[in-house]
Amino acid sequence: MPIMAALVLLAIQSCTESGIGTSLVPTRTAVVSDSSFKVSGRTVANTSLPARTLTQLLGNINADNYGTLSADFVSQMMPAWPLDTAYVSENEIDSCLFVMRLPIGGYTGDSVTPMRATVYKLTKPLPRPISSSFDPTGYYDQNNPLGSTSYTATALQSDSLADVLDGSDYQYREIKVNVDRSVAVDIFRKFKQDPEIFRDPATFEEFFPGIYVTTSFGNGRVVNIYDTEFVVYCRRIIKEAEIDTTYTINRSYMGSTEEVLSNNNLRLDISEEVKTMVADGDAIIQTPAAYDVELNLPVQEILDRFKNDTDAQTVFNSVSLEIPAVELVNSRSIAPPEYLLLIPADRKNKFLSETNVPDNVTSFYAQYDATNGCYTFSEMRQYFLKLLDEKGGIAEPEDCLFSLTPIDVLFDESSSSTGYNYTNYYYYLYYGYFPSSSSSASSPIEVLPAMERPSIVKLDLENANLRLYYSRLFENN
Image 1 (cartoon, helix red, strand yellow):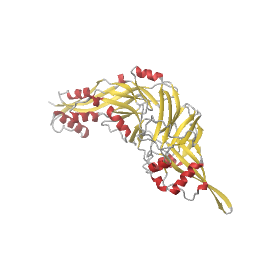
Image 2 (cartoon, rainbow, N blue to C red):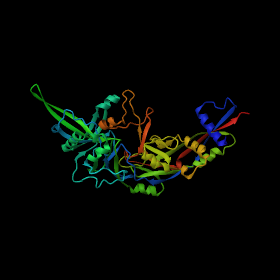
Image 3 (tube, helix red, strand yellow):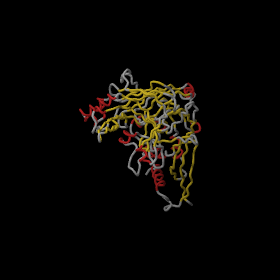
Image 4 (cartoon, rainbow, N blue to C red):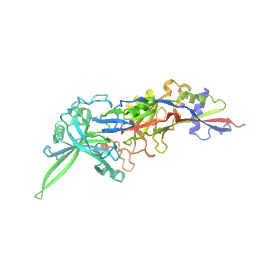
């Protein structure tokens, strides 16, 4: 067996079984810690993000040390199946609302700034593929909106189902747009005539291509929306004991869900202060669709440091990377990204275009530590063991070039008592997806390009701490 393969095998065994080797040959152990490695990097543009998001951004915002962001969105619609038409006639359709929901704190900027949202029906299906640079011109009739409304971010609602699920009041905010009842009537008629097209969003798209929502007035806030749906209200008058009694019911006819195509259309004019920092060589990460950082990690140097220690048997223990972060003060309290993904640069686009989670082998993620002002990647050992095993410890240039990109992370928040999962289609369609912060009881189930809200941070690469730990095993004499 080659010496290096034996060392890797020993490394794996020593971390999975206690006391390996001590029953065969008496040994003593010394742990080597080496943090002399230097990290370098540069800011790179990341201006086009794939259409993979559950968050729909809407609004306009301007901030120093950031720039000017305008965000609107287009979305295909998931129809309800079957459409509940029982005991309701076409004439009893009373009204229709387009409802957008956002969780408490689901905005950046001023909560009381008046703004106006306008909703349009798409005139043709959205193109595939589609990205954040998409221009919706030609896909809607600007002279024929479905409806508009003025709004702030302060109207409060309570979700009764969420109350049942977690035993407490879950509060959220809504933006409600009055839509002409003819929209509901057309959908009602179509279901009566051809219910089969409602089974598949691809066939339903031919009848109702989707919606475009934009800001038609106001500046100072961007909201992140987690649920959009068309809610239809029906009214029946029934004579009971010679008295007319009015019954009002509402039904969700269609909505945006993770199963259908949804895309944020982003236009970001980066501020001159940020452009100057980038030109001066600062490492800047900015969202949405602005800047990533490419890192040059001394992978070969770490491998050589481990391999060249030949005075004793060696066991590869761990590699960690801690990157200090500098928060940029701005007028809109735009904070650093909550999560960063560290991945070989040539794998980033494919990883973010598909459903993936970091595997701690070739992809890693870190949450922003606001207390200590840093991002820490602490589980990188398997990456180096893979290079030792598969390449004999010889790193190619692509093995050393990494992308550091902001991400949104979805966690499994299933309720053990109810069996509900907050990311399933039925909960999402009727009640919205409200993400929860990570906890020891949750695990990441999907990683998405960061579009939840604007963010920006400067990374202090000169003081990044890349640390190698390995053990040296000696025979006792």
